[in-house]
Image (cartoon, rainbow, N blue to C red; front, side, top):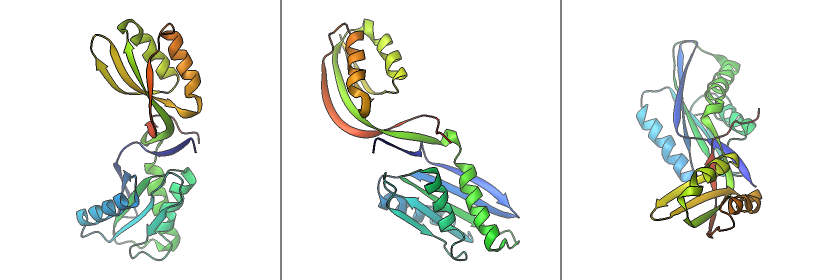
Length: 214
């Protein structure tokens, strides 16, 4: 797998439906335990809520899936929340939807629609980012005169600068999308007039802010 979608950062979203308040809290996670800890944290923060329902997809392949209705009628909360994440292909995320009952019963269909719409409405394009499998390289002994041009090319190629060290020359770590890192290296070498000095570092998945295709 070369890439997957997740949320850019933790956030919350509120919606009132038939006098019930629904509060969706999202967190990006690396492992299932982080998701479990977050669920517990939200439950403690809302001890008087009627329900704290949740769903999570804990891995980048979408295989580790967990959910709970937390007392709502079976199938009306956890699975609908999970289905939104699956349909949007958003992984390594946990979402807890807290409900404060407002006095109006929604019925089975109404609950499904309420939990589904709360999560779906919250996951707007600006909340998402793509994690791309990237080759990290360390460029060494680069002259300052090339830096501005290099940054422009890296932006064009959707590369990320991870770290920059300024001395008499510049040393920087750059994340290059793995599937085309050799051709990007060639572009960089051309910018540096054939004087590219670099060390291959680790391969990792790094987030890039991009618009998600609908």
